[in-house]
Amino acid sequence: MRFESLKSPRLAGPVMRAGDRLLVDFDSLGADADAWLDFAAGSGGAAPTLAMAKVDPDADFSYDYEDLAFGRIGPCP
Image 1: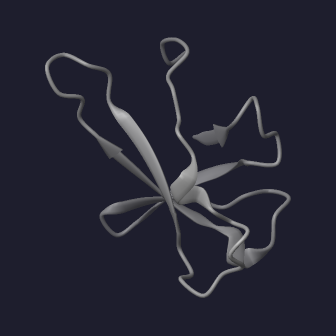
Image 2 (image 1 turned 30 degrees about the vertical axis):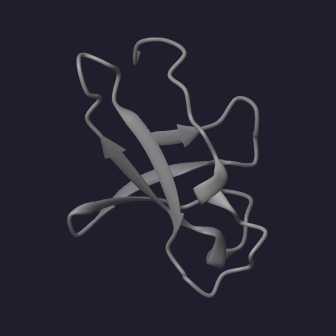
């Protein structure tokens, strides 16, 4: 499986399982840029949500994944 962001094409890479979590290993960003993918069930029939967090807490502050707001644009293929 791959993660790809249409609005931020550099945010793309394979998704891997690491223990109980999902990790995205970005293709074109540095090794310290890897991110956790955290899904949460939507409440009241709402769509699930996605949040990202840095794998390396000491990674460059410019990887501010916590500030991203992802929105679902369609069904999964």
